[in-house]
Image 1 (spheres, rainbow, N blue to C red):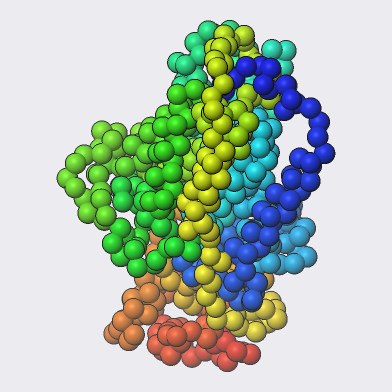
Image 2: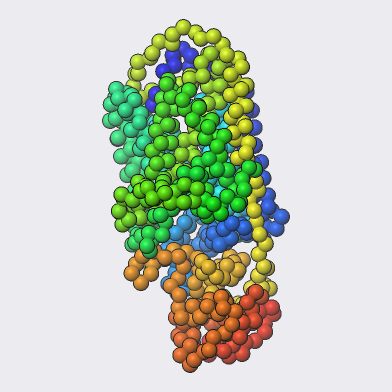
Amino acid sequence: MTQTDADPAEVEPARRPRRRPVRADLLALGAYALLGVFVCLNYWGDVQGRVSSHLPTDHSWFEWLFAHGAYSVRHLENPLFTARQNAPDGVNMMANTSLLGVTLPLAPLTMLLGPQVVYALYLGGALAATAGTAYWMLSRHLVRSRAAAFVGGVFLGFAPGIIHHANGQPNFVSNFLLPLIVVRVLRLGEPGRWRRNGLVLGLLVAYQIFINEEMLLLTALGCLVVVLAYAVQRPAAARAAAGRFLAALGLGGVVALLLAAYPIWFQFNGPQSYRGLQDGVFHNWGEDLAAFVTFARDTWAGDPAVEQTIGMTEQNTWFGWPLVLLSVVALVLLVRRSVPARIVAVLVVVFSVAAIGPQVRFDGVETGVRGPWSYVPDDLPLVEMMMPTRLTLVVVAAVGVLLALTWDALARTGRAGALARVPAPRAPEPAAVPVRPAGPARPRRRWLRPVGQAAVILALLPLFPRPLPAQPMDPPPHFITAGGWRPYVPAGRTLVPVPIPSNVHGLPTLRWSVLTGQEFPIPGGYFIGPNETGEGVFGAPNRPTSSLIYSTMDAGAVPALTDDNRRQAVEDLRFWRASVVVLGAHPREAVLRELMTALLGPPRRVDDVWLWDVRPLVG
């Protein structure tokens, strides 16, 4: 795909092999790895006992997913479904953010080191790997300067929006395949290579399905806009490559479908699948206009207090005003001659507008102006599951490419004398494109390079990430970690922790399952599953006893109980196939013990927990 009007004679020297780029590549990858370690630094102080301060429940869920991958491999069970959470109904793992493309390959490491260690290792590694593949994409296919590729790669891997999701959501930082997918899409029209390109694209897409389908969808939308924008600007080249492009795209689609057809079917039709989310829970989450120029919370210039103004939304853009200003200036200077810059401009405009949501908000206040999503039906397939603000992650990628283009143009300013020149592609051209004469040489502007590069650095420095904040978790009971539970939980029965795990209550008790390698099933949990009408809801539908436990915790006092409450407790335990109820150390331990004693009778003190053996009650 053509990316510039530069004379081919100017491009040839960039294809000559050089030794220096290899060293630059290694330095770039090493820097990314060190930055990944730095971002996760707070976890390593006590990796077994700390979780994200911002999203502790999501953090525990993903630790549980690593344990699920290890359990599935160790027991040779179907990883698309699990009964180790939400017993006895189970959880459809394909219908959740299961990260199977990561947890299954890393299962041996999880068995060796434990899910907490592997989580922290993977989180930093995913950030660095995403920056690394972005660096490869930029340095091999878009820019000449390795420094330019490094700048673009570090932003694509560690942008404020990506670091925000690193707080307990590693699926949104696992973007290392996306640059490879983008490159393959843009090479589909190459002469003589459509079969290879289509096959590789299909393999990459199929694998990405098992990492993060939502990011794959955003990438597909971004690629669609890129291809259309290119076709408008280069219609002759687009027509010449269209046949090969479509053939390769079709082959890639067939390959991806063959590999992922059953898991996708299972996602939408398997046990515990669902249709949409109840009340379109994410549909109203649009990007606040003030967020674009605001510094993100987890950056050096960020201030957590700003969330009280704009709101506790996802911080997907949050570029800060210096980067926004730099980006506008760079686009103005580059778009006249640079095809990639024009495509970047289109991406920024399209996805910034699309991310606004159903209501235009500014600085946390709804303006009353209807946004683009107000015209979109809530029940459209896929759309009903989308969060508008996340469309700005495409803008993040576009800004990363723009930074690389800007630095590359500045790096050659002293030689070419024109900021608006960017390098030609390294890949073969899909069709011959007329070349505009270069024209007379312009006077050199040696001052422009240091001034421009200093502006890029100054715009990025405030966005340097802080180590992710972490908070301690209460240690699990020795009864759980030492295996004291084993005599009480025979095969086919469950251990019922108090409080029962949910998306609001019971985070520590969910980790009991993680720390034991999911060796006992538990009721409740943290996941998305169907309600009575088949719509997706967070967590298991509450049973009367679990609701009673939660309300007692909130009130801090045991309500008046009836025989119906006690009879319902036995019925719920029978539904959960419980063999034992366990209460460990908890801030509400006293009131919870009083409640469970009133329902089930006096407990036994076993090791460091209160235990009710309910097998005589439930049969």
